[in-house]
Image (cartoon, rainbow, N blue to C red; front, side, top):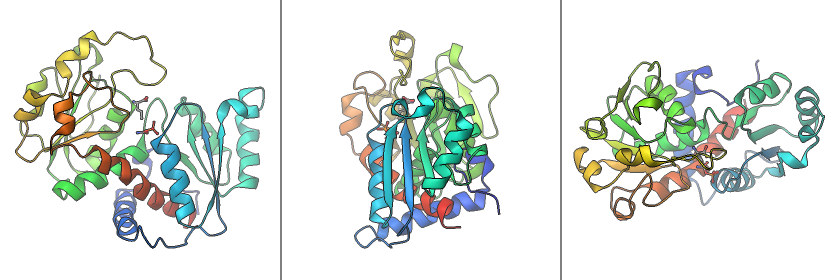
Length: 291
Ligand code: CP
Ligand code: NVA
């Protein structure tokens, strides 16, 4: 049987992804009495960028399920010197049962996965953030139910998180409106995805309003002036459906991509979203490691 890497959502069959989310809801219900399904198993976590949520939720999640973790900054590893991805993958495979990485270069993560005999889990690359989107799907289901036919509207930068929502749209059968400055408009939009230059048009009839930082890690120094028309504020929220929720993967830059009144409003579910990283990732670990 092939190794169950969790790197690209479209590489995993829709039923399996939906099964992971179902398991995540169950694990959340069991959060005070977690099943010890990872007993005797170890997860390595490697980061080449900052993290609060990804690092803590994977570490706590693995330990709650009875497993072990080891964390390293990529800069501390020999891969930051001359050691090859091939040797790194082979050696990690002899020590641990899975590896979760935050690795800027997506192609390098895929290359590592070709050189391991253990699952590789994508803890974010410059191109995608599938663990975040799994937690987001779970959060949307908790708040507004089945995603089928719902409208999710994304504002601001066309970045790794947005691109992963784009991959998720045909899997969960929701409509994704993407509203960014015109020079960032996706060159080709996937199935179920529509681009809007006008933010208010994009927000119309939306069930979920979502944004992220305008300056992703590694893009420091970039100008943000052109993003202001895509700020999530009360006026934009008023264009969405009654009961629409506001989501953000965090960290937040207040008064840039979102205003304080939106963050304080009942629509804001960002802390549920952050908590759900824990439950969604436990289910991802189980899917990858316990097949
Ligand atoms: N949302 C997210 O991935 O947060 P961290 O960068 O803190 O891990
Ligand atoms: N788009 C952001 C997400 C951080 C969780 C980044 O890449 O920095």
